[in-house]
Amino acid sequence: MAASAHRRIRSSRRPVFWRALIDAAVRVAGFGAAAACAAGEGLMKDVRFSDTSAAATSAELSRRLFTPLASQRVRAALGDARAQPLDPAQERFAVYVPAGPAPERGYGLLVFIPPWSEASLPRDWPRVLDRHGVIFVSAANSGNDASTLDRRIPLALLGYENIRKRYPLDADRLYVGGLSGGSRVALRVALAYPDLFRGALLNAGSDPIGGGDVALPPADLFRRFQQSTRLVFLTGAHDEMNVHNDLVSEKSLRSWCVFDLHSVTMQRRGHEIADAAGLEQALKALAKPRTSDAGKLASCRSDVETSLAATKAEAETAFEHGDRARAESVLKSIDERYGGLAADTIAELEARLGRTD
Image 1 (cartoon, rainbow, N blue to C red):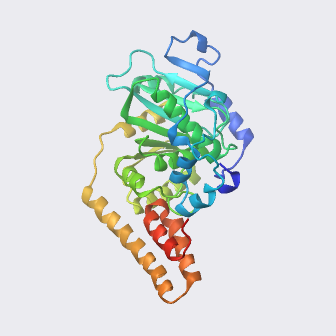
Image 2: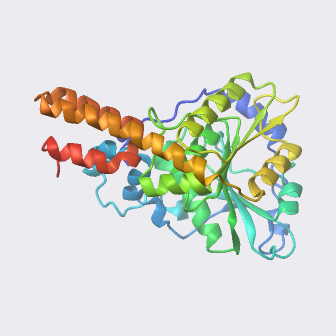
């Protein structure tokens, strides 16, 4: 996808900090001894996959991650919309498969998006993954310096697709997660792909949704996200900035009728990867039975629809007064705030402006 078609998620780049973090907390368990792993279990590094993903075509990425107007703008630059941004055979992944037989209902899966470029497994995670029967997959060259839409999200989707085709998975325990800037990308993946992932583990990074850089997906996907996706915020108590960011993100999500939110605080920890205890709590929170308040969800959705209708009425009033500039301004504000949720409204206003294809 054209680099000019989107904004890269901005995050602080502190190579010394991340190098120290990798050296201290993310040494790969069994690194260099992958050949000694039993076939199909344990840690495998430098894994190359062969399967592409229909979810990661240029057109599908645009449809799910861009607002309707932004998607229109990049359509001409997509070329073959069925094309994949990446060749999976050229990418490398770290994969960890728990020892022993697969769980009766299949493995859980955690697709992890790191802030660094290495494909690695945090050193104290294997025993937790074993206990919960969760496969871990993470791509190389998917750190904060990589393009979000051209690499980080497609790599996460390729990891999901290739593990799905090789191992029996439990459809209720398919998660995407990340750390810091990778966590912010994981939120975008969970929002845009609720048909693939049932939960997100957000370790020290989150954003508000709707408006700005995090567009709402098409209405059918967003309804599914509201109903079936659980988000777990996992942040160190001393990571004050991201504790605050989590609160802002949670407030935004609730305003958009997303209520299955859980928070895990790691005591005496700062801006860092989850330790074994934190991961244990997060996986337990993700796997808890789901409960929902249908009345609360319906009432909240009605409020959103009322707000959208009121904004649409502003555009219609502008049309009645012959104020095309005002109508276009309102259209753009609807596109930015409501994204794919307002695709039908946006298409209707586009038609009145005579801007349909």
